[in-house]
Image (cartoon, rainbow, N blue to C red; front, top):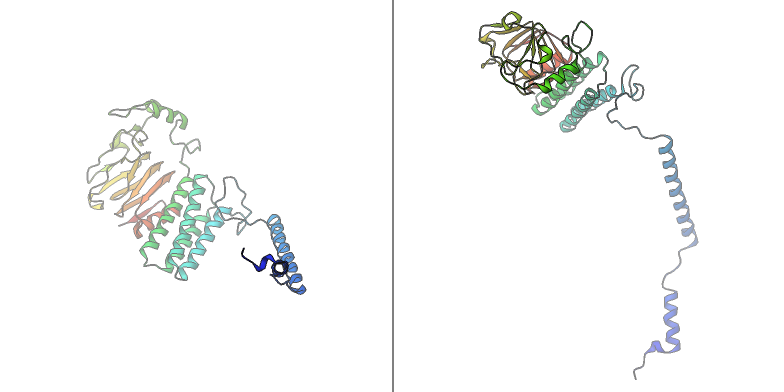
Length: 334
């Protein structure tokens, strides 16, 4: 039979004695310090929770439709979303000045996103907002004027401002409504939905309207010619039956003024239209997708109502977008 020291009474006593004194107790002052630190931590967390409840952090997100103009505005009469756009552009300028080009691009994109949201939510803008927005974008670009990527971001923001401007433009009608033509918008939409597209197509609502032409395919215009009400036998081109990507008038192949194509005194609605290479005079576009590919273009008393733009993001596209955003109706790029 083996003999173990732990089996002896003295051995058991020593074993339990070792267990009982395995850890030394901390000094009294250390235990008091731990209790005080824990109390301070709990108090700090409680204070922060109270402050968050009483003073919640205001986010800089896009305002919702119908929000008041007071909160977050930098001046009386300025809506919160307008103030957010200007703050984003100021931050982008600061980042660009510091050499953080990517951060500057992010600031510009954020401003453009707020403008897009405002347009979709049909938020009104004060008259000075567009001029201030263009100036803000100019300041951002001046931080690195030769950076092509920054130019593209800034130009896209200019295009968003131009689209917002067009969304707030009303078509001139006798009744003061923004609905073009002498027929109600609802009746027109219902007629379009029920009429097939094809040669000699006519929408029922337009059969008795003088000068109203319903298009089912693009119109070709010969070089050295003028398309006006007399040549077209109508002054209102309704292209709402056409696909949104289809051209209303086929642009000149050269996209230059050498073809001397002129369009005067007409109103276009729906579909798409390339502006390059054509002299436009006394023309109104309503709900049209406008394209600009960087060629020559001449606008003389041309208005854009609820239009969208697919412009080149180079310097020439930036010039055209800025002109439209500022409300200019006459502009030439040669």
